[in-house]
Length: 172
Image (cartoon, rainbow, N blue to C red; front, side, top):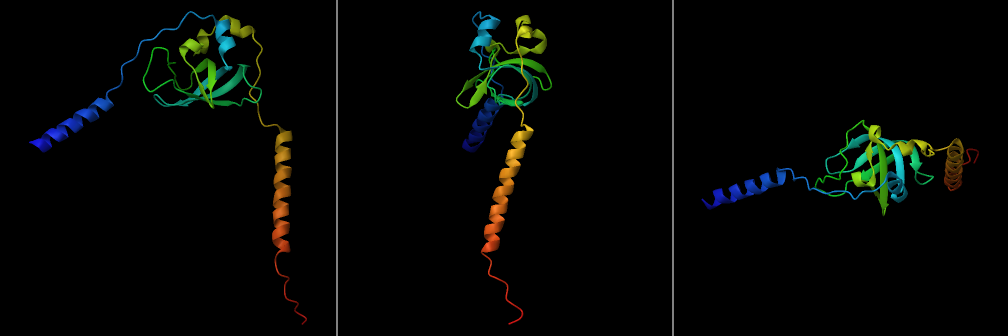
């Protein structure tokens, strides 16, 4: 009887962990799109390439409205927490968004309150802002990298070759 009760309790705990958490209600203070633009570290036209429930969201950036000069063409966003709230963005793979992201340490995050919306619902004021394409690796950078690899590789080959003992002289 005791063993049966233990298993029953274990099953109940397991089922409790499997039940989805309820959505926590929250609301955003009234903030204008210009204020959202000012407080964001990155504002970008992005498409979702992948995400996991309550996990990171991967985005492909088409263009930046605001952000660091060296920002690349991909961005990974951290979800706000482990439970869904009404301010979480409802991500859909392949969907295009106007993303307002903030940086905390080395991680990026966003919510509906930050201004992130589906691209078709973007504020009209964003269309008048200057844009730039994501940073890419230039041919100059590739040329420098190739030259460095050749120099290091050649140096290592020369050092290794010079440490070999001389081949025996067949005439002696």
